[in-house]
Amino acid sequence: MAKCYQCPRKCGTDRDKAIGYCGVSSLKAARAALHYGEEPCISGTRGSGAIFFSGCVLKCVFCQNAPISHGGQGMEISEERLGEIMLELRDKGAHNINLVTPTQFSIQIARVLEKVKPQLDIPVIWNCGGYESVETLRMLDGLIDVYLPDFKYADNARAEKYSFAKDYPETALFAIKAMYDSVGRVQSNADGIITRGVMVRHLVLPGGRHDSIKALDMLADALPVENILLSLMRQYLPCHKANEIKELSRKLTTFEYRSVAEHAASLGFLGYTQEKESADAEYIPQWDMTGLT
Image (cartoon, rainbow, N blue to C red; front, side):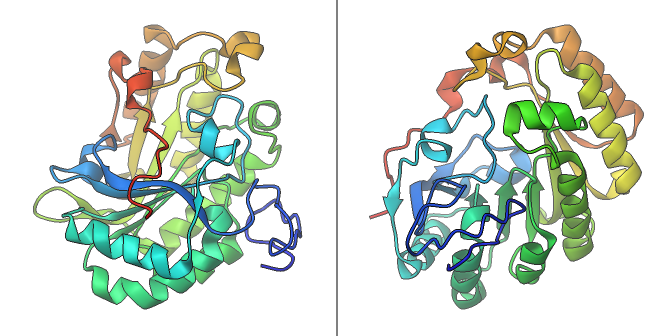
């Protein structure tokens, strides 16, 4: 981990000795369990084998998982234990292994997957914020079956203000194109569970519908919309530090969300939308170290 360059921050921290920009040093997670709160093609009927990692390479002011992504809550685990956790989730009937916010541990995860992936027989999902290094993604070729990135912003100023990543739009779009080049078009099994491909998530923010529409335009220009899925999320809540920013201190309106959803449909995107009831704190997991010991 000496001089870490796994993410686009390229902070160069020796994470054997210190905490990186991501807020963590050694391998750390906060929960590993069957998770039913993902899109139907991921959670299915038996649940997704979700492993929630601590730390994050983004610093989103509205993060719903802030206690673990920013606060560093979690438990240090060994690479050997991570492999065991994946196999335990498989044995519990998980439709997939869902690696949530994994970027800061890409090297360790790749080593684990090289050992255990032949035993899994279920897809492995890279569930990330979209802010990825293409070099790191190339290291994951053959190990990841489904990429589930966010594409948060089209505007650099918004990306800087809300996630402290001014280069997010171009960096994330370049990374998503690399993900698509790696795994190709979306494929599903007989039960409707995604087994390969890319599904992009976009969270519509209050006051941000014009940026959302532009982000969808950028995505449609970059990738064949008929070969990917879009998950257009309505679950925004003013979490973490969002109440300190006037335009983010409220929930999304029906008009804002519906106008973005209609634009997505006009571009030919297929995938998922959400009802307004999804904006509820009860859907945020408990960071209780379930499944780690």
